Image (cartoon, rainbow, N blue to C red; front, side, top):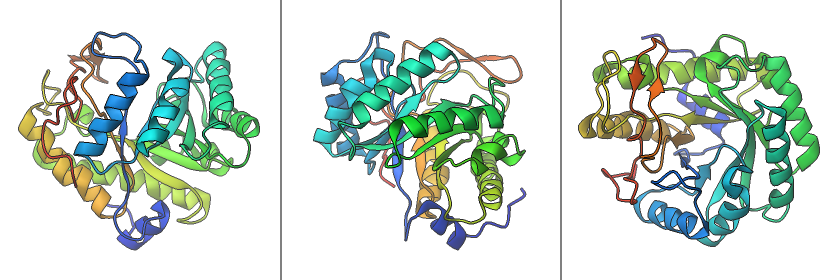
Amino acid sequence: MRFSTILPTAVLAATGASAAGSMGFALGNKNSEGKCKVADDYAADFKALAANTDAKVVRIYAASDCDVAKLILPAAKTAGFTVVLGIWPDTDESFEADKAAVVQYAGQYKDTVHAVTVGSESMYRGNFTGAQLAEKIKDVKSAVGKDVKVGTADSWNKYADGTADAVVTGGADILLTNAFSYWQGQVLSNATGSFYDDIYQAFGRIQEKAGGTDKVELWVGETGWPTDGDKYQSAQPGLKEAETFYRQAVCGMVDWGFNVFFFEAFDEEWKPHAVGEDGSVADETAWGAMTADRKPKYNLKC
């Protein structure tokens, strides 16, 4: 395994943490039947997260879809959580609708909006170059004002290989890096090491291009391991495997001072199967740290 030259002290400076990092969860906007959540659903989500985790922040992906910004922000404020709002830039329609929702509701809940991400793996999918995405981020920064942090989320390798350099140098305030040892087909015994290496490579490139360890707020944007479903190459889903990855990889990162969003808070039973890079199909319904009815699958406190 190849580690970059980022040392724990530099990591702590990069994340803004003096000790442990912060823990957060990705949160879906649909219930177990695939219908849009309502306000009471988000209230129940936050209640479960508060009772079973150390998290105080969640991230969502498209602010206008299912009226999520309108519904989640008051629920988060009541529960003492903050939210990373998402803008989906892949079509002009979704970009403008999400941007309008962010502008409308972020101003009403300034203390509840942690940040805004423009795109989720849009460079990984090839929908934007780094320069194109940087322009989208500048557009949103202009719309929301200087008090709101704006950036993006993408796969670790798009940061490590330089695809995202224009985003890093173009004024992004926050960058989320996704890394899944499961989707790389890793055997469990190598999953934590592979995950660490991916993040070190990505964060190292970001810090180099940003000109320091304190220029951009860094998070692991997504990582996780399914408790059920299909084997993907050498990666075996299962409750024991997921708990091991959570304890070793996720909590290990947090203990070292990294900020981590776990994918995801609750199972989404309505989801269709996903297709991996090798073309094989895998179930994506059992990635939650909790079941669809908000019961923890294992100890979620780091």
